[in-house]
Length: 119
Image (cartoon, rainbow, N blue to C red; front, side, top):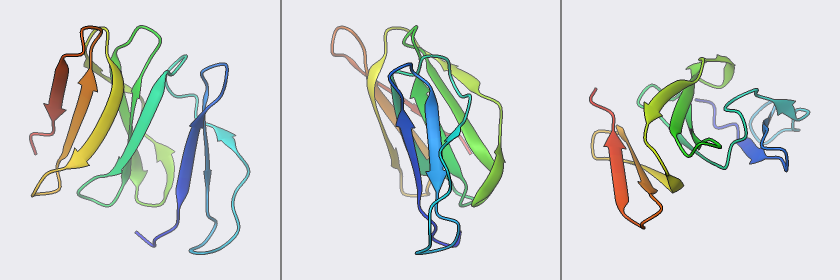
């Protein structure tokens, strides 16, 4: 929680890569493959209650997945966990009043789906 920035991108092959500031307002790390979800189509990131980044992704089968930093500002990351869903796209994230994540996604019929953290 030291205000370093982190950035994620999806390559043309669907790999998720990450870079981060080595210190607040400092230089950036080399790009690293996160070996996250196979063939990611979209990603969003949010900061959870404990100050750790949490990454959400829709994969090639249009299902929703997430993983999180196990320690704020540092590796390692958790393994990916499925949040289910079919035919999802265009995901977005927000924190509600008590800082729990809510993730929104459209399906192929432009219907809005929402999932949220319970604790």
